[in-house]
Every structure is written in C-alpha cells, then in structure tokens.
Length: 264
Image 1: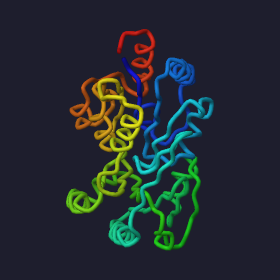
Image 2 (image 1 turned 90 degrees about the vertical axis):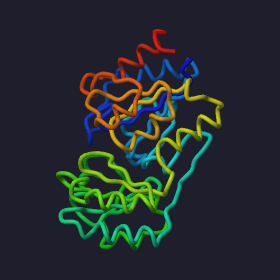
Image 3 (image 1 turned 180 degrees about the horizontal axis):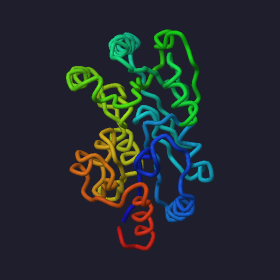
C-alpha cells in the first residue's frame, strides 16, 4: 500500500520556471490525504516558490525545498547549513566561468549579484530574494549555492569542476540552466528518508517522481520510482518505471491509478 508520495516539480509536474499546475492535481492531493497518504513536493526551488504552486492545498503538503537542505511540515522544520568558508571558495571559482551567475539560498530567502539570475528566480519562479553587490557578504546561514547560465550551466562549468567539487560537497545538475551545491550527503533522498524513518514508512510503501540528476537519490528511496518521459537518460535508468511526460501530466496519470487501487 502506498503511504508516501514525493514528486519533483520542474520538468516533472510542469515546465521549468513556471507556476501553473494543472488544477486536477489539487483534487487528487486532497483525496490522497483523506486516505492518510503523505504528499511531499521535493524541489530545488525555494519554499516560497513551491507554496505558490500548491497554494490551494498548502495544509495538505510537506515541502522539501532547496534540493533537500530545507524541510518544512507542520510538525518539523530543518535547515542544513554550509560552512561560510566553503561558500566563499565555491562562489569565487564559479564566478570565473563566462556567463555564469551565482546565487546563494538561506531558508526561504535568496541573494543574487546579477540581474539575470535575480529576474529568473524572483520574477519567474516567485522567489523571495534580494539583489546585492557581493553574495559572500551573506555567507553565514547558506543552505544551497546555485550556478545559473542562460544556455547550459553543466556544459560551461564542465565535468572537471563537477567531479572536483563533488569530493567536498553534493553538486548536482538540477536543470539545463542550473548547477546546485549543498553539503555532502544532503539531497532530496536524505530528506525523504527522514520522513520514512519518522513515520515508519518503507521504500515499498513509497512512490516518487523525477526528471533530473538531483532527483536520483530520491528515486532510490522508493520502490515505486517513476521518471517522466522527458527525463534525462540517467534518471530513466535510476527509476523503476517511466510514465508520460510533464506536458502529458504523466504524474497525474499515476496518482489517479493509485486512487483507483491499480498501484499499491
């Protein structure tokens, strides 16, 4: 029996950087909660942005934000913080890559040096954020660092950068324009495990959905793991099943199957 459902947002439920969710999801979430199923939105987004997506069902949801570094429910709140010296070293190197812009996240607040990343996150995603001269002035209390590039952040920083920093931190591609960094072993999967342990829920009782590299650890915590059809190949390989794309509401199709008793 499914007792916990966790889903990514961008690329999985909706188009990256948008806030418009198919309203059918709200009725499905309400029905799942009536049946005692925990429903978790697990995203690289800031909590303020996630709440805008799920406004009609806020009281029915648990939020894992900033790639698992921030957890928020009625009963539990937690923020995992990066050491300031690590923040400064990462930011200083990231700044050297042409066209890359850097932002840092505190719990439900972001700081950005460049107008491009500021407009993308505050304007498009609905973040709470501030444009500043130097993000390193706010290095105390950082839970996530983001590198933004208008075309392809992963390609611009390169594999050498990703492999080197992954020896120190957890660095993951979270979208075509995004590379995110947090403390080692802190990710959506570790955050999901917290709720599995807290409520005595097994991976066999867990359903999870994702599309990008930063979803893989979460998918590994669920026996019922689904990649959407538009997911990266690595994510499809990590998942046990593939559903329709986000444009075809593949996640919604699976959730309705749960309600009908076809997936348990």
